[in-house]
Image 1 (tube, rainbow, N blue to C red):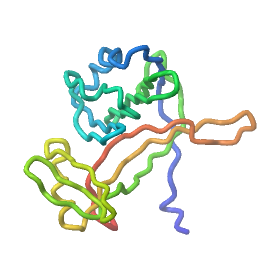
Image 2 (cartoon, rainbow, N blue to C red):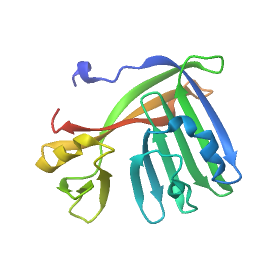
Image 3 (tube, rainbow, N blue to C red):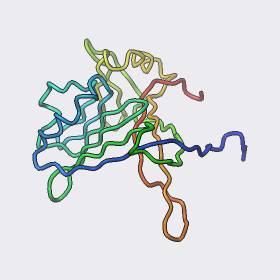
Image 4 (cartoon, rainbow, N blue to C red):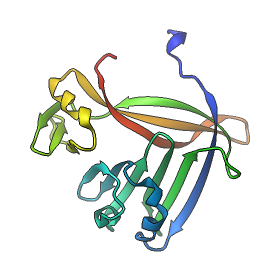
Length: 185
């Protein structure tokens, strides 16, 4: 095992807030500062990959399962549970509400071994039938996925917490970025 490839644990100032949403639409007012951030939404009938536009009501459908709106510094995560929806805001920022948090970043290759160009999007798909359409305006490098020499990669930030027994565990995860990277690189 090469120790040069081990993940480095670092410390950052971050803050987390969780809100119960009586109505899903209430989240719109809380998400104005996320305008233009990357968005991935999982719904009962589709997955949406977009840049967040607070004027689009489609994001706040009752068919929502999970919705992540994110950039390099912060993430809004809306998730459905038995009693409705919750919103978790997680931001790496130094202010009076932030605290020292240990973390490590990781990159995961997302599905999609094939890609084809459509008029307004790139369709990334698996031979088994699952696909996602990435609008060209969301990820300009998506066209590189067609050459079969690139992957779609998700970067996550993994926050470490400690149990009462001092056992370290991943306490929370937020999406940081989605990019196109060369295979093997």
